[in-house]
Length: 213
Image 1 (cartoon, rainbow, N blue to C red):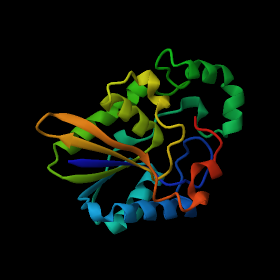
Image 2 (image 1 turned 45 degrees about the vertical axis):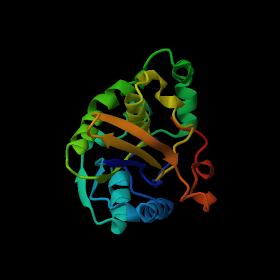
Image 3 (image 1 turned 60 degrees about the vertical axis):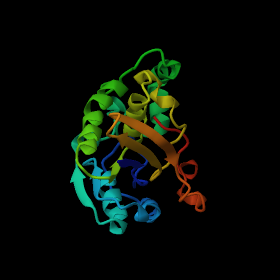
């Protein structure tokens, strides 16, 4: 079984984890990833309930026509007190936290929010549900924090190191996971593949944000 983890398209706001719709660029990204995976025979599309993920799933699914299944457990990591803030304000107000986080000495929760372990506990059961579904090809439209934390779990890394995975996960990038029923294991096939976006520099994150929280 092949599971394609897809980060949602670019949203219409740069504020931290606000529940908003896609920008026009985000819709273009979603269409491009839909076209990229059109030949994969995707039977079902899972997404979080957040607007940007739902809209990405719907736009990409125009190329797949799979069943759309929404799971709240696939929502982005909670940034707690940072949510709704601009990056510059976060950098100033949470300077000490950010320094401690960068040391990666423990799996720190965001102030008033979640840590990587919290996300793993709610998201991995959804992957296990998908593995037992009988589908052969499934797309999962979710969020950067979810893709990073789930990947650490699948690779048996300590959760505190999740931020080492991808300096910047591209919107509508593909991280492919394979479930081997015989061995009962997930295998990583590729991570943060955004070849379908490379011809369009304006769609890359470097043209939109300076850093990720």
